[in-house]
Image (cartoon, rainbow, N blue to C red):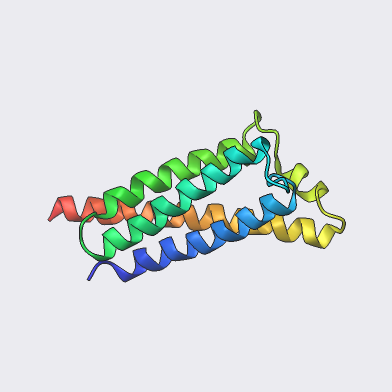
Length: 137
């Protein structure tokens, strides 16, 4: 059996990611009826969930190790930072807050994103720790 704490952290991160995907849809990144503008959002979401779901399956089966999660987590952190916290983004925290009719809904969405980033940091650091511990043995 693989490390249960890492599985829990990755699962938590995935669940928070689903909530953040819903937030993106509520903020208009998913156009209905479906149009070409929705394709990048849909493709990114599909690839994300295939990588995470497939990775969890392969990790539990013992076919991949913590290095996979360290790399995937690092990529996720870069994407999250570039997508919402860098000076070059078109969807900074203020955009998320302003996208909702009430301040409470905006803060819920932003808080969810912050929790997602913290869970991603924890998952990545823990996977890196496991990787380092394994190479020291």
